[in-house]
Image (cartoon, helix red, strand yellow):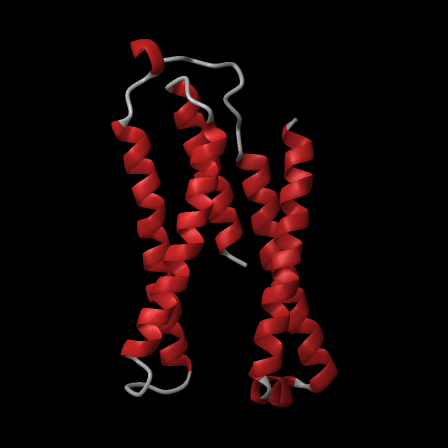
Length: 164
């Protein structure tokens, strides 16, 4: 849910960086998204193996998710370093009028994701009551993540429409 605004911002920055070098940003963007999710999956698997028996409860989830995000960030850093190493085409830096401002997309994705997740938690607490909702975190958290993800995607789409 919180990764979508980060990915939107990273893809926008990477695309602008590629355009300044006279290169097509599509391949670099796809590589960024692929390495982000591959790094996240690999980090989650390794972290689960490391901390499977050492901690319990929410600490274990935070450790696993934190490690997964760190590995995802490392995958994104690889793509940025690769593009930074590449020189501009024909040795000419470009200032392109098509450089896109991704702030509306980022704002829409953030507002939609956080709003959707918070709204889901609020509805669950209203339906089940605060005590029972806290006892059923296995239902509340995935629900908040799914609705937050959908909200972030919708917010990003409306941000794209506002940007263009």
